[in-house]
Length: 163
Image (cartoon, rainbow, N blue to C red; front, top):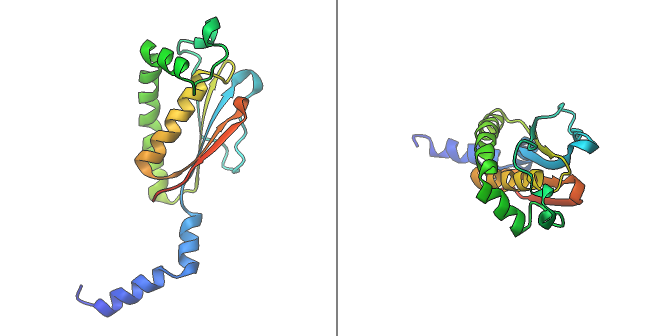
């Protein structure tokens, strides 16, 4: 405040295209994927060597019941089954704690990529539910760009950064 002219010059300099473009390059993108273990763990295309891989197979599987087989973790009957059973909620609480801490540090350190994958038997119910909820959670909590891929369902969605 003692040097208003200098403060204005610095603000204008940091707003120049060459600096804002560099800042955008350093913004974090989190790639969240669901997959089937029987088709293999997804590769990390960023060249960073991967990230988190969470195994959802310990959570009660709606796919073992005929009435849930035609649905995915995006459909209300499966969502209700998983949430009423409760195992998935505790599982995700632990996932959120780990991934939130990494996202916070990655943002502070200027990292640009983090990968989080959820696997289950068929890549249809538990992993889809988990990936969807984590993607929404990260975008809402941190405002980061999240690229969501449900590999076995051939569904992709991007949550744009709000920061």
